[in-house]
Length: 264
Image 1 (cartoon, one colour):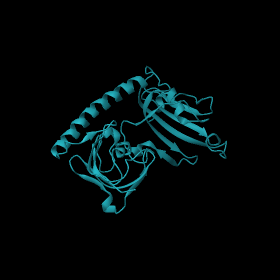
Image 2 (cartoon, helix red, strand yellow):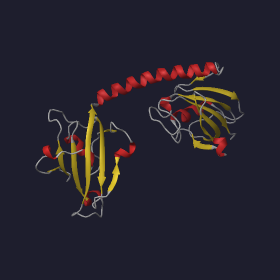
Image 3 (tube, rainbow, N blue to C red):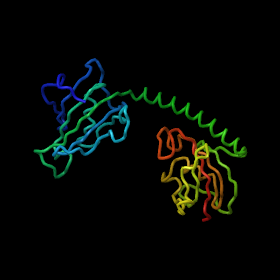
Image 4 (cartoon, rainbow, N blue to C red):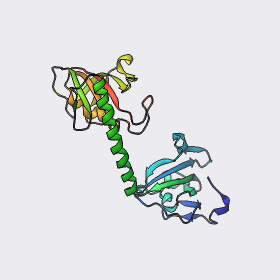
């Protein structure tokens, strides 16, 4: 990460008390500003040089993505990224008393930073919008194909983008935001690969509607059903786990839930 040949000769110090030394790769590069998105790696060491945290545990070769925001705390190591250029590394020291209320003024935490790349907020949001637009189109085709292959042409689409079918209609009231609900479910991919099953665990899923205790698609999609209903809910990837893979669920996956809502 560091090269001794281009290190600055002296430590620099921010107004907040952070000491840092830059290792510059290309001085022609511009620096990121507050609001920009960066891809970086960070390692934090204790005063005894023991590694406390390392972003490489997330196994992302292109760096951990984050948005640079105005510092809310008295001291925040991410401030140093605004002094760095693309490809730069930095060695940072922060006195313990600035991070810990009872910390020592004579000891310090050490950080090693690497700024892999960055993008302006405007450029980042444009790229994200294009990705989301294309993925939404792909999801729609996948969901329509699934409904057709499973002879569920009576499925309805809600305002959020979920498709749903009330197969068995219960006698209870329609679910609303703030309601408490319990249900059994089987979670599948559109290939019919089963990734979760509450029946197998013999434990229902309980949550309060609208409190973001479950994925967005289920939180919103459950309001299409009534207490006592059994049905199918298809959730587009943007309302599930998006471009992140989670356990047995791959990135950009449309999810299918067979749900059985318990009577109230």
